[in-house]
Amino acid sequence: MPKTKAIIKIQNIVTSATLNQKVDLNAIVNSYPTAEYRPDRFPGLVFRIKRPKTATLIFSSGKMICTGAKSEQESRIAIMKVVKELKMGGIIIVNKPDLKVVNIVASASLGGQIDLDKTVSSLTKTMYEPEQFPGLIYRMDEPKVVILIFASGSLVCTGAKKEQDVYDAVHKLHVILEEQNLIFYE
Image: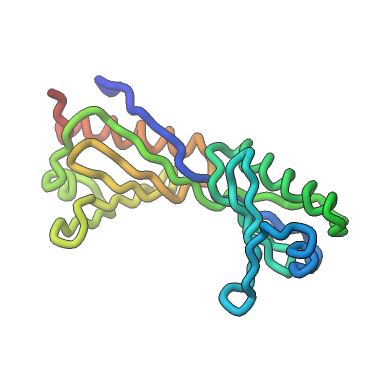
């Protein structure tokens, strides 16, 4: 068990959804002038909501990508709220969206200094080029995530598909760093 408890904060959850039908993006813009749609620049429409504060990309294929949520539940709520808004705006949506979390990004602080030079030789699947980037890139197999490790003890975890994977990965790394005396507390 690590000497200190890691402080973990979910920063962003990216969820994809599909409506399994075509969507008229121009009709959405007509009903919602605040929606951002510039087909000459990007094929998707950006639909923002305030609660939960998210942005959802909507494509004419019926695919949607929601970003900005801070939990899986918040992400689901946001997509369902966007679908409800579209229906209220006269957009016919026949199916309930199929949802899938595609990426979770979290930050963490382990509360100690990490010796990155020793860490790169102790862990497998790492990349560390301090002249290019100050963090060590660690590809963990189980759970399958990528963790950026900084000398300050700060981490960025990305690639998780479930929130629990973030907590498991950070805890697992923290234990490894302590067992191999790679983290130092003041």
